[in-house]
Length: 82
Image (cartoon, rainbow, N blue to C red; front, side, top):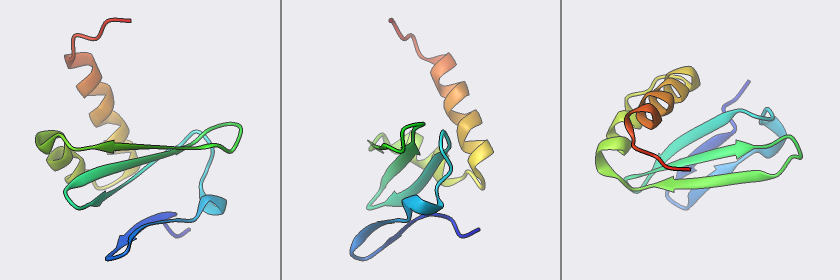
């Protein structure tokens, strides 16, 4: 299956019909990481990350499993309060 998220000089290209529900997709555009998530109700959620060190780590991920692991590790290292 083609990856449903891509970028070109005009911006972000999405193929939501090819996206699996509850799966995180990503791409890099203009030194920003773009994260796209299709939820159980087919609503697309999009997040933009500008933090340079995190964008660099995301760039090194070769598949979506590595990306999810990166975020799990990142969140565990943060002092987040509910």
